[in-house]
Image 1 (cartoon, rainbow, N blue to C red):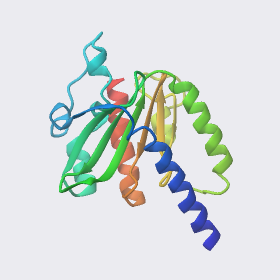
Image 2 (cartoon, helix red, strand yellow):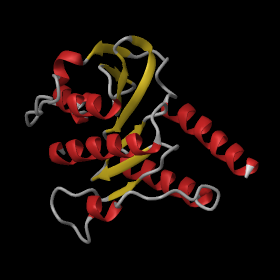
Image 3 (cartoon, rainbow, N blue to C red):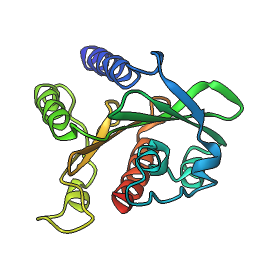
Image 4 (tube, rainbow, N blue to C red):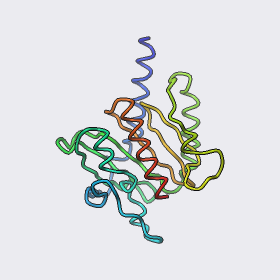
Length: 193
C-alpha cells in the first residue's frame, strides 16, 4: 500500500511540474478577472484571434467558486503564440494556485497523442475511476462533443476538440471537486469551440 501512495505522489509531482512548466517564463500576463466576468466570458468573434486565445474564456468563474467554496482570482497567462493558460488563485491568498486551465490552440492533436501514450504507460500504476468520457466524446462525430478526453484525480485531465487541447489540473482539490471542475471547464470549452 505504501508503494501505491508513493507512486501517486510521484505522479502528482510530475503532473504539477508539467502543468506549471511555462508559468514562470518570459510571458505576458494580465488579470482576466474582468474579462471572464462573474461566471461568464465574452464569446470570441470570428476572426478575433486575441479574444479566441484567452484560456479564461473556458472558465465559468461563478461555478468554480461554488465548487471550491471560495472566491478566486483569474490570471490569463500567455505562454506562447499557440498556448495560453488561465490560473485560478485563492482571492484571499493569491500565492495559492487552485486550478490551472491550459489551452494548446494549435498542435493539440499531437500533444493529445503524447498524453495518451503517457497514460497508457501509467494506467496500470494508477487505477483511477474515469469520468464518463462517453458523455463528452459521444459515439461518433456529433457536433459539440470532444474528439477525445481523459480524466484523472491527480494528473492533468484534458479534452481535445479538433486541434485544440484543453488541460485542467486542480492540485489542491479533493477528487470530487477536481472532477466537477474538469466537467465545468469541459462543458464551457465545448460550447465555445
